[in-house]
Amino acid sequence: MRLVFKLIRIILTPFMLIAEKLTTPKGINRDSEAQAQVDADCSQLALYEFKACPFCIRVRKEMARLSLNVVKYDALDNPTHRQALKAGGGRIKVPCLRISHDNGEVQWLYESNDIIAYLQQRFAAE
Image (cartoon, rainbow, N blue to C red):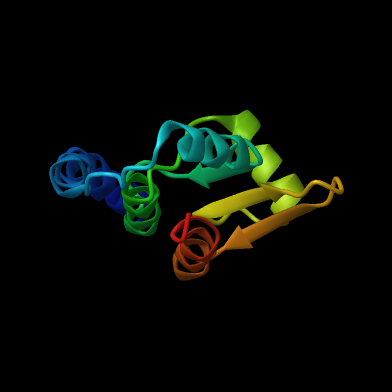
């Protein structure tokens, strides 16, 4: 059964990634100073993802719409990132947004809807 799902994923992945490329919205325009501040704030964020995960695609599209430069880690094909996700967040589930706070605390935010709501609340008004 696992082989069947792997085969389906191999077949569908290129189509999903092409569809993402074609439907990703243009980012919002900010002046250079405001974008520099957003980029600095984004340096505290990291998205753990699987490339063809539909929920990860939703989050990446919202990040593109908000013009966010967030580092992305492939937790499917990279064992180092996969282990970091498990060690930090407690489980291997994507998408997961790692938020590093100024006080050194690290928050692991799961669920695409929660991640999108967080990004919109933090960056949409800027």
